[in-house]
Picture (cartoon, rainbow, N blue to C red):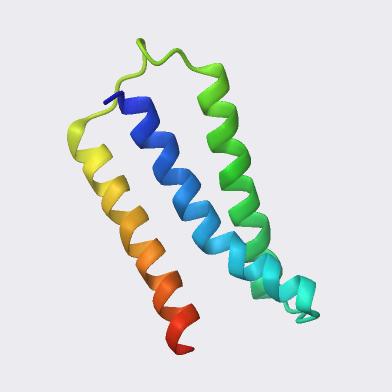
Length: 90
């Protein structure tokens, strides 16, 4: 599997996990600075991942294996935290 797709896919998952619930709260009418910052950060991560995916040649992209492992693990934990928060209201 190409390193670029793991890299950008992890950023997409993290951005959606952070920004998705925040944007949902903003749409529902909840207004606060932390929610606004989470929404901006999540959307920014999604935009950055998309830009990186479109502008980078997958054959030339390199990243250390440990960095990809940590990033993929962080994406899994972020997604798990979002699911648990949604299911249990933690």
